[in-house]
Image (cartoon, rainbow, N blue to C red; front, top):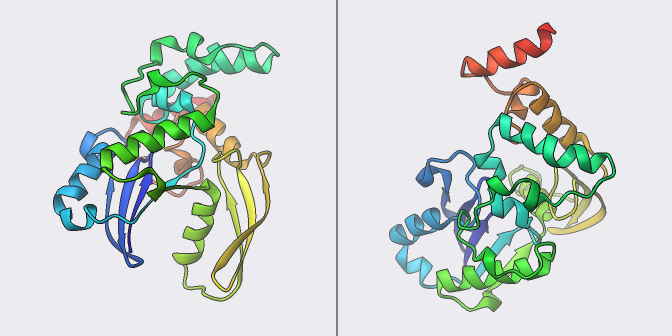
Length: 255
């Protein structure tokens, strides 16, 4: 069984598995040189296909991480492309009015950041930007066309189910277990509680109102650092590396 794992949001990547064993992994940023690059991982796919043509011509299944993706994320590629100042502009133009009870149109107020060509998918074909089902069909059609496979070989996997399986299978535990997932957002969820029995995962609870990840995200921005990248620095789990990321948070604390 040959399975291609594909992720098309930030940190876009592909993984080639043969009979359950990881044969190769490639991340789009390695080829585009854009940190945390997002969208369809075309360059990563091309690299693996060149190295493993036999396996690519015999793909049995494609597992795509995330059932629902955000049209707005694809249209702006905000996480790889936005700098701190851009997130602050987004706060001023969109989130502040929204939190004040208004209903701003994101594509309108952030129009200077929109470029449909950035993520490879034919976004100009979509009729309703809020319809994740329509967007999923566009993603599926493009993936099938690019890989030259039938669409029924493509399966979309719940974001938190991916996290939960990774937590379990990357650990030494093989007994029945309880698994928690917590993040910023994925498939309308930011936390789950799961059980795994006899190797079978069952999600017993999920919510989109557990905001720990979002708090870390926002504190990172308030400290003058890059959301979705520098949260580990806020937690003290990673080095600051560049002088800029020492100076800007220091200004915040000095006030």
